[in-house]
Each structure stands twice: as C-alpha cells, then as structure tokens.
Length: 208
Image: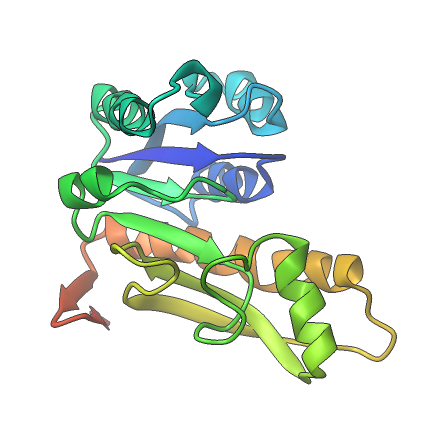
C-alpha cells in the first residue's frame, strides 16, 4: 500500500478528488496518510479531518529563518512515512532538501499544458488570465514530477480542455479543474501506486 502525503494551501478540491477516487476504487493500493498545509485557514485541512486523516500546519510565520521552515516541512513529511508526496494546490516552492529526500517521488498538478503558462509567477487564476490574454483555444492541466526548478520536472500526464467564447479566468479555472485536474491527478496516483511509472533520463515511461 503506497503511503501518500498531500500538501495543500487552499480549498483542497484536488485532495477531495484523490479521496473520492480512493473511495470508489479508481485509485488502488494507495492511502493518504497525512495532509500538510502552509496555511491554518486552508479548508483542505477540514476535508482531511472529516475523512479521519491526520493533518499538520507548517507556516513560514512560525519559522523566521527559511531553512528552519524547510526542515520543519521535511520533518512533517518524513514523520508520516510517506512514499509519495502530492502537491495538490500547494503554493509553497518545494525546497531542494525535500526534492533531494524524495527524488521522483513528488508530483504536482499545474493548471496548464506545460510548457505553456508555467514557471515563476504562474499559479491560481494567474495561469488562466494569461491563457485568455494570449487567446489560446486549448488549455488544460499537467501532472509532473518535481525537480529543482519551477514546473520543470518530467511530465507524467496531460489533459486538454477547450477554451470557450466568453470565458472568464474563473469559468476557465473551474472547467480545467473539473475536466482535467480532478481526472489526471487521481490517475497519476493510481499509476504510481501500481508500479506503472518509471522515470528514465528525465522522461516518464508508463507501463501498459
């Protein structure tokens, strides 16, 4: 059984998608053992508590020195015994000491088709604002492994979503979540939990 820690910053809809997929059997051989947030106000913590999952809040405010925060976050993950770390709407830039501790064992969901609209500054509604400003006809979401860069790790899964006439950043955000994020993030966890994902020379191979 793959032990999964989920890192969150906000409402936790992607966390909920994972929990729902475990409950209905779309994810097998995996369990969420801990939910960690950098914000005590994150509703995701309530979702986790309601599901009986241990939670922990690690805030930057509590650790004036950045390296102390980094170590505290690493300890919170390590204490859970997690074998996979899932960034599900986590707005913390994952420090190198955590990347090094969990090589090819951290995945992130990004609300665009990488390499479009990704990297420093592209998060939340900003991604969808940029997509609409550029006039793209298709956007989507990407699950990728986390490395030392921002949205630069090997791509695991992508799913395209149509941009419609009259879309606002909020309507587009909702469609990307419903049609892509909540679909491919559980798929990614399931593939990893069942030993079907391999990272070789910076590229992902998925066994049939």
